[in-house]
Length: 167
Image (cartoon, rainbow, N blue to C red; front, side, top):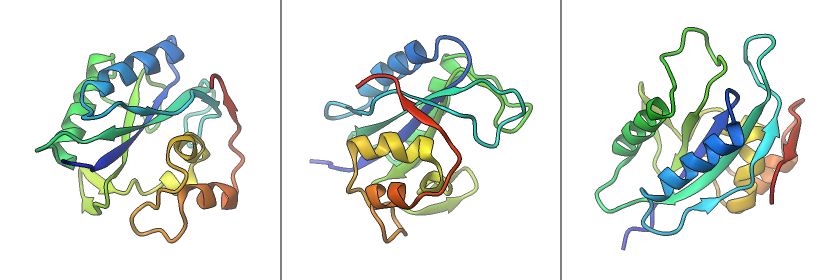
């Protein structure tokens, strides 16, 4: 049985973000071989976003990959889901958006392809990723990192503010 777990970060700062993330998690559950591991929802300050950007709601899920799925096919499904939820092609880097889905890790895979870098190159620097990821996979060691998620979170120096919205 396939036991590869993909970790996906979700974010939204346009519309009813908690509802959008909840609905997106329900859609992601349909792609998972086992029940989806779901973090709490976290309200977070924007990072590297245009001035005046609204706060985000973020979460992370752990999806057990279906047989035959690979990182490229999963990425295609995530991009299609963003579009379904109303995401338009970006005009400005890190602009406000209804739904952002980032593939953080796909098992132990490493990739430096133009369309997909694994693990996500900035995940270990972002409290809005590490905080929810720590809830569902504190012992996860991202490929290429010596510390696990819990250790990365403790060592993180960041001005980000994260507030748990639900448990």
